[in-house]
Amino acid sequence: MRKYFFKEPGEIREYLLASLGKIKPSIVLKNSLIIDVCSGDIYSGNVVIYKDRIVGVCSGHVKAEVEIDVKEKYLAPGFMDAHIHIESTLLTPPELSKILLPHGVTSIFADPHELANVLGVKSMRLLLKMTKNIPLRVFIEVPSRVPTAPGLETTGAQLDVRNVKRLLKVPYTVSLGELNYQNVLYGGYEYLRKIIAADECGLIVNGHMAGLRGSMLDAMIAAGLVDDHECISCEEAIERIRKGCAVMVREGSTERNLEDVIKAANKIKDTRMFLMCTDDKHPDDIIAEGHIDFNIRKAIELGIDPVKAIQMATLNIAQHFGLECYVGSIAPLRKADIVVLDDLEKIRVSEVIFDGKLAYSKGKLLWSIGKARTPKWALRTVRISQELQPRDLIITVGKQYTKALVRVMRIIENQIVVKEERAWLSVEGGIVKADEGRDILHIAVVERHKGLRNIGKAFVRGFNIKNGAIGSTVAHDHHNVVVVGDNADDMFLAVKGLERMGGGFIVTSKHRVLAKLPLPIAGLISTEKASTVVEKIHEVNKAAQSLGCTLKKPFMQLSFITLPTVPELGLTDKGLIDSRRYKVISPIIILT
Image: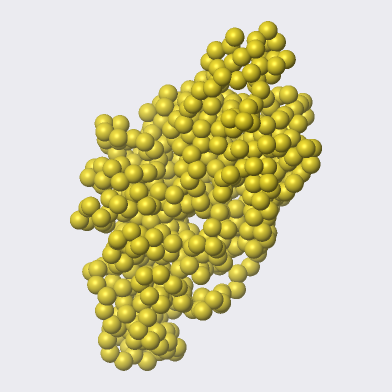
């Protein structure tokens, strides 16, 4: 760890004297049931806080400036999210902190590769600036894959080894962010040098090992990847744990993996290598069901001991990142980030202490949180070629053909994998037609960073849209424009609408815009309050469903269909990508 503890001897002495009662502590939490994640026990006691740190845990009477009688409620360490993309919440860090604190979340481990893929190194400075003076600790997982798929996508920026080395030395950097196996295998020495750079700084490397088993999994762990948030089954989780790879138990908006993965924790005696995370979760879901508290609650419902479930969201994460002496437990020296819980079943949060101050109590935020300022260079990042025409968004062939056998991208609700299916489609006037009856629609990815004419096109099943289109500039991880629809005109209107508003979500039908959610910061993040964003999410989801879409989270689902690093297909501005072979393939198989 760097720059997290003390700056001078006098500071150490001050905390020491507060522990001994020679200096009056700031706060004492009396009559507490302390969830001791270090020993796995729960015991009665008082927690003594001086300024921003815990200086004592005792059973005797202690006088302090402020004495809070907890009345035998439970005290847990502040909850943590081991792997999150802030950009996927669509909120600025100040707005995000407002909705996380009521759920007991005091620390997040963020990989900002979404912003980095659009804006580059300077986006890191912007993000760090936005995290100042908010009741949320933001530890940085330095983006390793900008771009994610070199040569197979166009991004707004790149982070080379030189950039990564510099970022790894920034305070509160804790790891090299998720590295996918394709880049380790096929990316040349560029990505291997990034692993070495992290090792030289004493930092770990996060993994992205979707679908890997056996010798391929061994190879990635041997290359230095020490955790994985892409587990989707009990069997995958057990294999990773046995091979010394930590499992990040993910429950996001569409990545609903906890129920299957947590089964492994009931079969393994030692659960220290299970870590809770959300990865990608929209604010409406956070407000409606919770965040990491939801993960803990669900794990308990599925048979995990409450203390073990809380360990997965606190100490386990802190130890994994080498921060166990700084955060993650209720013990002297640690930051005074404490959650007061009414019970151990529903994990109802009553109060939250952050940095030694009462920040949330009984439904009220007690921390003054300002609005993030956004520089002009982070806005208006959507640049579409002025030569774009509606016909460019759909697949065309020679007029002599009447049928086409095509590859279809089949999405699976609540998962981010995309399966390959095949179907025969009609060809009329050189246009390979969508088939709404079989739910086979057009999908296109339009380059938006440099105004190029790159357009990837394919067919998709799973959206059930009729007489319209939906579009987004949130398109992992390249974040070009992605649009799905049954006709070129509404798809074109969606693309142009996204350009006009600087990015976001949009729904169009019969030459009209039905709903939109502007995301002007890099085309990824809103400048509005969380409540406004949630209202707009409901509007665009309702509009999409009015077109027949049956998905609960159509825009989150849409954002992952463009990712070329998860099985089996992805779509970028360069074309349809076979993620297993890491190459562009044709959406057309046979023409007759």
